[in-house]
Length: 230
Image 1 (cartoon, rainbow, N blue to C red):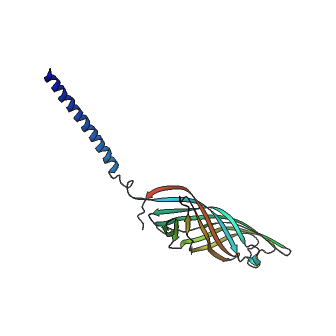
Image 2 (cartoon, rainbow, N blue to C red):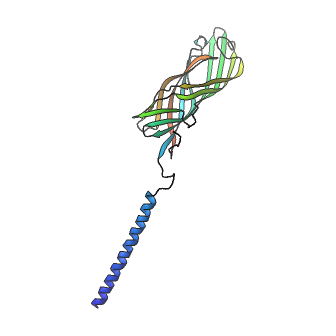
Image 3 (cartoon, rainbow, N blue to C red):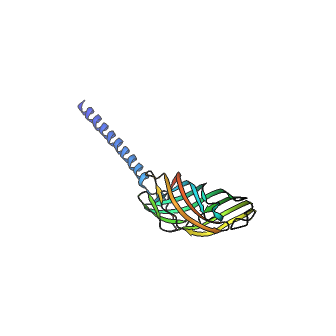
């Protein structure tokens, strides 16, 4: 009887050992699946964050100052890539719809512009470089190739005079130029940012100087592979 109990005990111990071994083997396989490389999917990636923006467009130096003012415009979009403290602006665009009405003595003139301002990324897909210091991005390069394209419509007595646009509807283009943007200052959770007023362009037709300030809010983010192009 005792021999049978002993044999039974040995058999149970053996089964327990085998069961433990199987559990250990399964755990090792699971661990291997977690830590094993899976090609590019497991390679280091960087956060690419999309922000929608609103803009205050400040216009000065218009003919006789009649068009001077600050005009809310938008929406716009900027895409930023974060790699540690290094930040890259991948794209920037802003829709700008502005209506200015001038009254001078007996003359009334209305100028309406419908344009889009955008940056031009380089061959690596980067429009500007910056450094993240705390919650502030300080741009170390200008924003590359900022250009504006669209149409302007002018109606009234001053059209075509004193630097006002030609009468009727005409195309409007500002060639690409580098623009040094002010720092982007983020909220503590980095979901929103603001940019103080930054001078962007002077034009002769229409005659005016333009500055912008920005307010952005995060709309999405993805973890993408670090680009091969440096």
